[in-house]
Image (cartoon, rainbow, N blue to C red; front, side, top):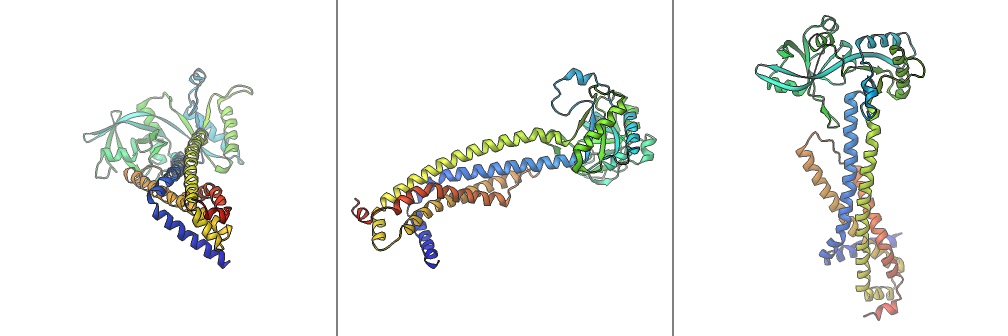
Amino acid sequence: MKRILYELIESVRIAMAQIRANKMRSALTALGVVIGIVAVTLMGTAIAGINIGFDRSLAMLGEDVLYVDKWPWTGAEDWWNYANRPSLRPEDAVKLNRIIAASPDSQLAFAVFADGRSASIKSNGNSVSGVWTQGTGAAYGRILTADFTEGRLFNETEDESARQVVVLGYDVAQALFPGRSPLGATVTIHGQPFQVVGVLARQGSFLGLFSFDNQMVLPLGAYRKYFGVRDDYAEIQVKIKDKTRLDEAREELTGFMRRVRGQIPGERDNFNINGGAIFKEKLDPIKRGIAFAGLFVTGLSLFVGAIGIMNITFVSVRERTKEIGTRKALGARRRTVLLQFLIEAVSICVLGGAVGLGFTYILFAVVRGAMPSFPIEFSPLLVVVSMLVSIATGILSGIIPAWGASRLDPVVALRYE
């Protein structure tokens, strides 16, 4: 055991000496490994960032919430079928809640009706356009995932009496009331005065598609009073009891909604059940595509790097043939020679991997500094995987020339010119 440890330490020392003696050659040889490790870490960072961003977005939607809509959130190819569907109405949510209440074993907790559209809001000379304005009930507070930086959601009394109160999204509040609290202030929406009773905490955007901070929430009665009863974007948000039984809850909700709509068996659903799982289904192929592309680039880079290392190791064996003959003539074992050249190849790969990791971390720090909210993560697991890939590349590329060196006949090697 001591002999093997000594040989290992001596091989590392010789490898470092050879790398220092041939700095430029070693650097160029390691370049392929550097590119490969950068590709590995960037791919891992990208996939981790997508997962983080998607998890954050799902949290905003609510992992335990299903959405009943007229339209599907993705893939609305049969446009005429969806366009001819009847819009959802507040009465549908009332009927659905009655069915849920009469079903004690239901996986559904309660339903809240919500309608929305884009509108402008003004206050003291400041204005914001294109704000998503949602009218809903007080029970929406039990579904809402965001915290409040100030204030609260409107209560049942304000909801039932259609009081002109509003809850502002973070960005809307900052734009209208920079540097001061908007609580109690009056804003103008659709030409009507509304009192601010709450401000939502910053939430960010959903997969970069729209911002949850550019919204405002009104009592449904006040919303319908001034925005009409078109229900173009109406939906019913349904809280479920156990998010681990989401599929069961979806099936149950489909059956309940068919009863609400009075649909007969065999008739096609005239509504859609949407939720975060739909986006997950769409996102998974993208993640697989990124992983496949990253794996291809990584494999190609590492293959080129491995070929270069193998070639340089063969050159090194040829240059030091007499040295190998001398060592073997003095009693060096095949194992010792094989270990020496194998460790040289692995050392180059490990150094290349370390440089690649350093370069990737610099890119990570630049992106994180420039875009703090961008979902990106440099995990310790990436460091471990990258170094293991580097070591494996060194072993695979160095084993053949190292094996050849260990099999040299000392007499032939000493006569080599």
